[in-house]
Amino acid sequence: MNTIRLAGISGSLRKASSNTAILRTLQASLPAGVEMALLPLDGIPSYNQDLDGPDLPDAVRAFKATIDSSDGVVLCSPEYNFGMPGVLKNALDWASRPAFASPLKGKPVLLMTSSPAFTGGVRAQAQLRDTLGGTLSRVISRPQVVIAGVNAKIEDGRLADATSLAFALEAINDLIAEIGLLRAARTSVAQPA
Image (tube, rainbow, N blue to C red; front, side):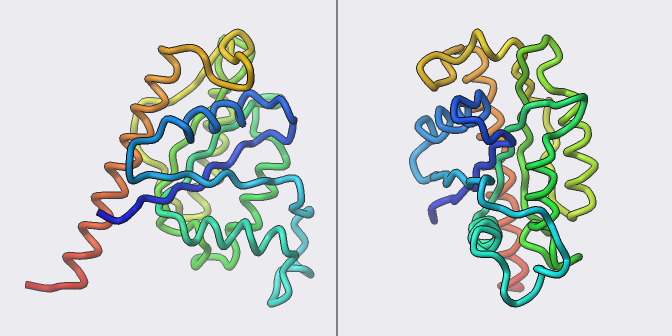
């Protein structure tokens, strides 16, 4: 089996981000044959169609290339004012171009949110689903991964809560299964009987 490459995107720029800590913990816990690159958002400029051409900003070019070469995307985001952070929306706007032919089109995506509040960022997740629908991504169908009370679940830059980690890894396995189904479908289409 070929290596499965995932692109991990944290919706937070903060150095001590809980969402980045969750992604790093998942990255270190992936099954054999699966790897995840974490994509930084801090160098991506505000979306400007004047810059959206053959000479893309370097950070945007690298961001889009990593998504394009990945088999799936794992988004882990906080909730700011009942929605996704602006930095994440901006990055998704860049990645959604060109319309109907972007690196996100048809890409399996797993959504995770976390929050210090008891809702775990569920409202941001709803907004992310709407935005990703516009990019023609394949947000996988599964129970929502929301990590409530996240501040008490992060220790030394890692997701230390065993129950939350097990649930998040189950979601990763669902993403891997979706990627496997897509690979099998592409193979059967490429090799007609």
